[in-house]
Length: 300
Image 1 (cartoon, one colour):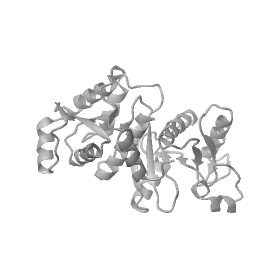
Image 2 (cartoon, one colour; image 1 turned 180 degrees about the vertical axis):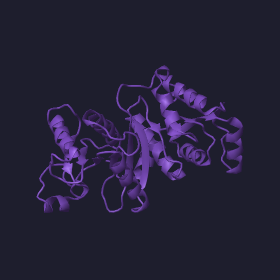
Image 3 (cartoon, helix red, strand yellow; image 1 turned 180 degrees about the horizontal axis):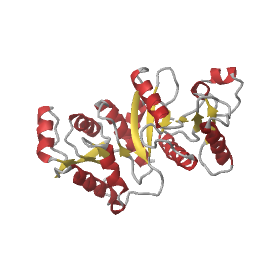
């Protein structure tokens, strides 16, 4: 099992290089991350965007891009469409967002002409390395689905399990995180948790063990689970944390990143290929981690 981002980088280098295409590549942090991925043998790159700006930024930042193909497309929507077409045609393995709004990239991904749609919901999956824990945490959905219903949550679990398996977790333990660990008819998230557990037990959600509802503490801490008398294979041992809505997920992910100083990555799954969609505030290290995670998903 891959337990930290050093492992992610190492295994990605062993399983790479894969080809990525950057949509609207005129961004210094993205170019730095792509260069680092190239130097580590993780990925090759095709850069789509304003060619003059890409070369200017690379020159100012001393980033050698001489080995990369540059496709000049100054219009951002057109650049995203061109990047998605390249991936959809099999000329690249994954898509990376550059200096462009996420909605524009995802619109290109969802365009039927690119061939990247699967019929599944797209969901954001974050991976965090938190000091003091012996495993990585897979968290979803922190960035896309605002208030997912039961069926959407089932697909969010499937997407998150795909990422966990790319991290070599054979049977991911999925904790459905709520405010409390008991089913409460006045709290819809706990009712969804109960139903998701039932769906897992009936084989409708496969390749994982689903437990819940859990409060966050008894999802990740064996001691907290034992103190509450919770007996379930997932209790205190969750690899995957499924949150009730985007607010909870976004707050949890950013709290881990900024308060706990967790190393992190983020990726969108549910399309035929992973899509690296990081925040503009993310460092190039976080972007590199996300690219490496994408390589592991493609390689699985």
